[in-house]
Length: 268
Image 1 (tube, helix red, strand yellow):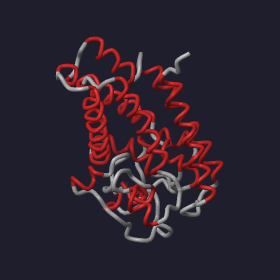
Image 2: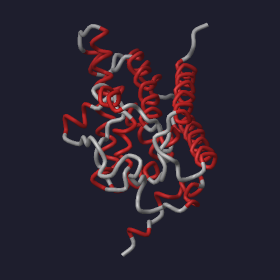
Image 3: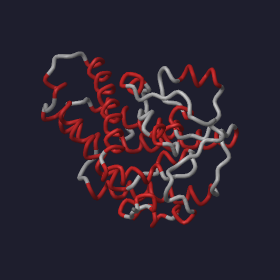
Image 4: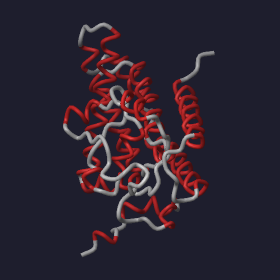
């Protein structure tokens, strides 16, 4: 009996999550400030809520959108006589670039930043930071991907691969994992590493507004948003924002209403 795309994605997510979580215990990079059980309960609950919300927000999700576009022969790649392997590679590259550009937009458009700030106000950095996103950001991101997939005419297999790679890389590059320096430098040629992405979660604006890539690191290097190391060491750098740092902000209700609250730093 063939495995459906949702079961495959869930199996990959759980497998990578367990692997990264175990690595955080064996080779941690930093000592966490908050109790792990409290953070994990909130972040996992938020992730479950986001999954349910997507089910109610869209009649079908991005892989199904790709299948429908393929049936209707919609989109750029359905109109071009390209070999399948080239269409798959091109789709993966364009989708990854699009997520990079979307990430920049979520940092620079004020309302979008209020939503994305929920991800950045985590004062720790571990595998569950990779699933800490406000529900409205998840919905907008899904809508963006669905429109893009239809316009591209991206093949179903490419979209499925991209979704698995995106969720897996988000878990990996948010991992509280200590990689050997030489291995980290080597991996940065092909994938965003935890040390590279951790800089993006710094309290300093110039570091937060760098290293926007989620999977391929090439976009940051190509467009000048790459930063190799933080101002302070990885062990000493301050994670998060200068607002919403109290322990009560870890509560689920506080995360959900956070975009609609004015942080103290914004008050004149």
